[in-house]
Image (cartoon, rainbow, N blue to C red; front, side):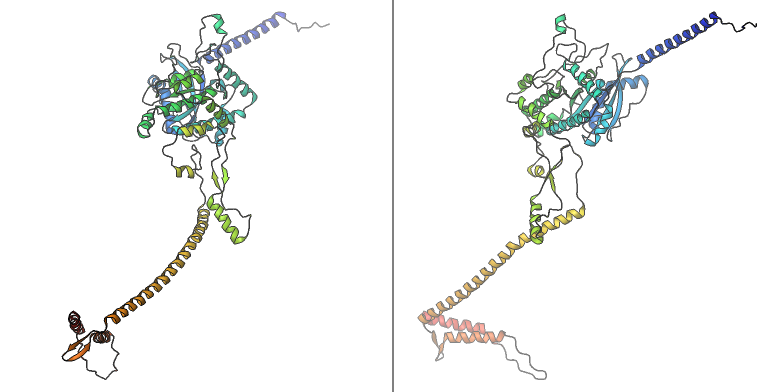
Length: 549
């Protein structure tokens, strides 16, 4: 019987299994160490969704926000500034936030820009809103002091666009937004965070659990992400004061409207001037949760200096807004803003028939006999504002000085809309031709009436002239009958002066009449023309002598 040569060694099996386990532990140890190092070097990523303004104003905002950081990065690394690509649709740029010692990078902020609140751009914003990016995103809306009368309408357009985008998000994003808004409501109300986002240190353990309640008109329309409104070019307030006659009352009304509306969204407000330092970097960075560990920069509110206004989130209230100027109806403005946000968006212009179009329809109906014929092109006008609209109240209080009655009547485009709808050349000319025909018919009717009046007047004047001549002749005959014939003795011959004058007139008329052409071959002796004027003067003198005698 052969013995089994394949012996099993328990020592060898145990040693091999231990070596494998040791290798796995080493791999896990190295991977955990590499992950920790990578996570330590990974920068916190923050996002800013910059809405409104122009291409230049967005660049000014970016430069004022990152002026110090860009200079530090350039000095330390010698690299160029990051480009700002915001000329078309959704733009992008970024910058790094450095600590006070200029050595440590606190975060990298990505800035996404959009200048036009068109519904077509909603699909560009939606991919930026994710459960991971919502807690690290700040929405900034730019306004410009060059046109403060458009602010309410611009804010409404942007907020309606954002609400349209947020309504299409999934449940996970909606839940994340609710959590973010819950944390923001507790800022500065005695909870765990101050107004600038830093951790609050309660004096007692009881104060840590007590927070102030939300006041009236606050957080009524939370967007789901923090909002900051930046009013640029505050130096133009002086220009409005000098050229447009603005006073402190107008500036206070603008500020009261802004604060009342932004209070409903829990938003912050700041006025900036390009040439002056401001708290804009502190406000934006604190809203994103970026704080320096070496140098704390507290966020101080300011509602006294009209060109340096700063209203942090959760600081304002209806009582503070009323103190600014008496007579401001905070309740009506707040409820009117809710009505403005309840309108359908995008808004469709209303179709109305112009007065000229109605005349065209009537003229065409009279010619063709078709009552159902419509004009070739309908006129559109801007839809009416809802009842009690805050936009309407604001535009009634803060009016555009460059708008006159004709501009208001002829303007059918939105204040923030850059495109102008035009018609084709042939259609425009065809419509104008019909209008000219209608006006021509109207002008011809009074012209014919005036012609008839002129003809009647001419006939009447001719008849009156003939009657006047007849009356004049009758009066002269009566005078001659009363005076009698005038006779005088001339060389022993009795001469009738009237008869002599009549003969002289006939002879003069015969002398001035064209002579008939004589046949050829015959010669007629020409008689010298008598000087009838001297004769008439001679006999007239004789008549005057005889009357005087």
